[in-house]
Image 1 (cartoon, chains in turn brown, blue):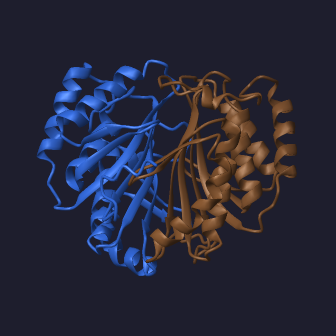
Image 2 (cartoon, chains in turn red, brown):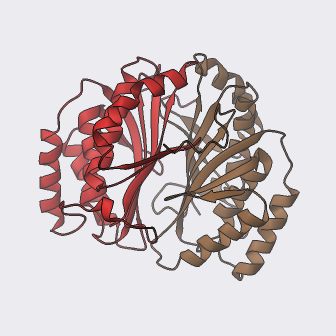
Image 3 (cartoon, helix red, strand yellow):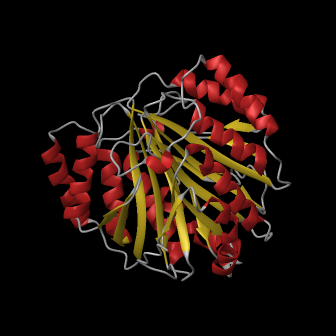
Length: 207
Length: 207
């Protein structure tokens, strides 16, 4: 199954190039299992679905440690039709709706509870898209239950769901959302935004 | 039909707050026809689908005029199930596959050709998601043809399509992609990233 992500890091600082360059070492331990390519818009990771969020988490936490306001924006995808040799994406993890929804939620809640905490608070939002299927709302509600029970749910917004918490819990909850919900063989995408060190944390700036 | 966008602006500069605040006047002419709400992660626009990209274009071009490297990231949506009173979204525009694909492509190519140019070059990428339909690939190919004929297609990448050109043409081409392709009543989302003043324009930084 083809899985990967296009992501970008935005440090809101004059020295954004130095900050990103200084954090790239956080990806070193993933380089032998992920294909990594960067151009002027984004960085591509292709590899096992269970590695995508830990790699982004480690890089983002490293950038956030600079103290500057920074954002990670990512389009994560599994089961996208087309594509080249995909053996690098092989995984032993169960993907998608291989079990009843309540059992998958239980397992995912446990995974998030056990995920290492980073000490870096983050806020963010995401949308889960299940392509080519008109029965995805129960899966979306299951994923909301996971977020709520994992204490990373902030609030629903138009088009997206807002999350907050330690980066360790938030990235793990999004990883579980990506891996455990939706059809096993279908095309799933997750559009995510994660922010740290915002000057207006938790602000509701509605006029 | 419910239509809107959650978008964020990322100026890569210490003075990101001042740069964004200084550009907000670009939205003034849209405020009577769009619902606009901002929190610490993104800004919501809800309103007629044909206004979403012009509003984002005007704001982004205003920010890019600062000369700093800046990025707009957006999740655009139409036909999302649920939602409150949506009369603010009413439109006289034909939406989605109301005519044969070749005729829609012709009309969209004309719209992009006639769109005002801004003098601001941009690069970016996007993914078009047609939810709840397994017949969306012809619509995606039709949209690629539009981009190619409008001279804003850069290249396909994993999971996304890269675009480039004057902001006027690029935002119009993405607006036409959003409005003219996919089912008229279905749920369509567009995940877009637009960049200006990058220190590595057009770079292919593959290791």
